[in-house]
Length: 395
Image 1 (cartoon, helix red, strand yellow):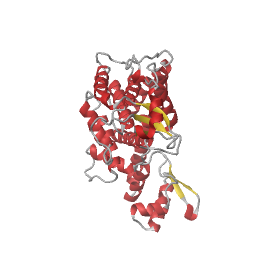
Image 2 (cartoon, rainbow, N blue to C red):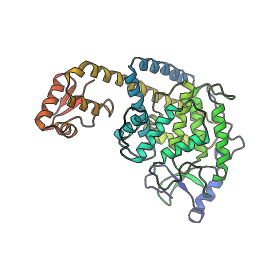
Image 3 (cartoon, rainbow, N blue to C red):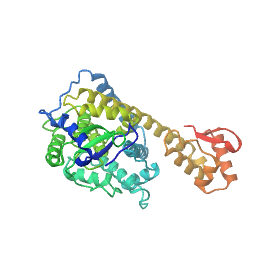
Image 4 (cartoon, one colour):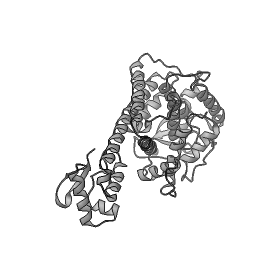
C-alpha cells in the first residue's frame, strides 16, 4: 500500500479488504467508464476542435521543414534530445528523477552512436531504452509481447514488481491521493481477472484504428488521446501504466504522421500535472470523452510548440559550432557540449571557473583564460564579478 501527505500526489495501490473495507464498499457504488454498458465505445464531438487540429497539422509540417534544414547529424541530435526529455518527464510525472546525462548516454548507446558500457541508474537506462524502442518500432503492429517488453524496460531496477506480465492480484487496483486514512480515490480499474480479455480487445482496437486499419481514426491526435485514456482505464500492469500509456500515445501519433513524432508529450503533461490527473479522472467516469480529447489536443499542440523551439535551438547550436570550431580548444568545446546538453539555458547558475576546472581537470589560470576567451568571442556572457563571475551561453 502507498500513502502520501501530499494531496496533489497521485499513487497506485492495491486495497486489502480487511484494512480498507469502507473505501472499497464506497467505490463499488461508483460507476466508472469500464463498468458502463457502452464500454469501450467512446463518443466524442470534434466540431469545437477544428482550430486546434488545424494548428497541429500546420505545425507538423513546419517542424518537418525545420528538421530538414538541419544536417543529418543535427537531426539525430535533436531527436535524441527530445527522446531524453520525454524519458525524464514521463518519469518525473511518476515521481522519479534521473540524470539527463545517464539518459542521453543510454539513448546514444541504443542507437549505436557510442560503444561505452552502460552506466548510471538501471531505471534511467530502462526508460531510455523504452524511448528508443518506441521510436524505432513505431510502424510495427502492437502486440502483447511488445507491451510486455516495454514493461520490462520500464520496471528495470524495480525489484518488487513482476515485470512483463499483466497484474494478477485479487485486490482492487485504485488510483488515490492524500495521506493514509484520508485518501481520495480517483479511479478503480477493472479486476485483474478481466485484464487479459480487456487488453486483447485494446490491442485489436489499436491496430484496427491505425492508418489503413478497418476502423481507422484519421486524426492522429484524436487516436492518441483515446489510446491513452483507454489504456489507463484498464491499468493492466502492477506499476508503470502511466509511462507505457504515454509511450502508446506517442506511438499512435507517430503512426498517424508516418514517421517518429518529433516532440515530447510528457514534457507538456508534466507542466500541467494536476490538470492531467483531473482531466483523466473526469474522463474515466463516462464514455462521452469530448472534454478529454479537447484537453489532450491542447497538450499535443503545446508539445509541438516546444519541439519547434527545440529544433531552433539545435539549429543555433549547430551554427555556433560551425562558426567557432576552429577557434576553440578541446576544453572549450567540451564545456560547450556539456552545457548545451542541459538545453537552451545551459547550466543552472551558469559556468564558473570552479565548474570549468572540475569538468576539464585544468588549472584555475587556464580555466579563467579559456572563459575570458569565450566571452571575448561573444559565446559567453559574464555576470557578476571577481570570484562570483558566472557565464551564460549566448546563442
